[in-house]
Length: 172
Image (cartoon, rainbow, N blue to C red; front, side, top):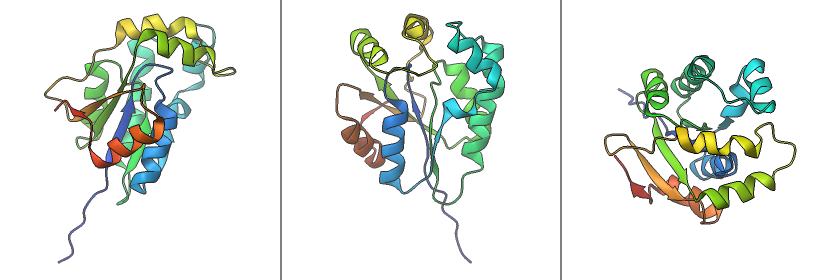
């Protein structure tokens, strides 16, 4: 009998400007898994709100978070890495309801560093003005959640290496 081993289901999470997409792509490459940018899964109405500087509500986020979870659950044997803010425990619980094996890699940094990164990112739909609302919303990973916390002051390649090898400050 052949045993099927599922690949890693990784969510690279954090506020805007933390490097989720960059680190996620590098981690996916290191793991040999496909990468999906959660921003690409937002419905057009969400993108329009964020572009206008209007924070999303939990109602806005619900269908998006379910889609993130479904993408994780549908991953092939190579696994998948998805960049997704997943700022609240309730949001991560919605993702885990669809993909119970998901592991979260939380990218954590100072407000100053994050703001600097956002201002250096022209053309992105998420304006720097929403950083404070995201930081106010953020509920860091808790000890009972499968995941790790990483300092975004480190180079993206190092963060990706740590995700791929599970070498971060373990939370759960």
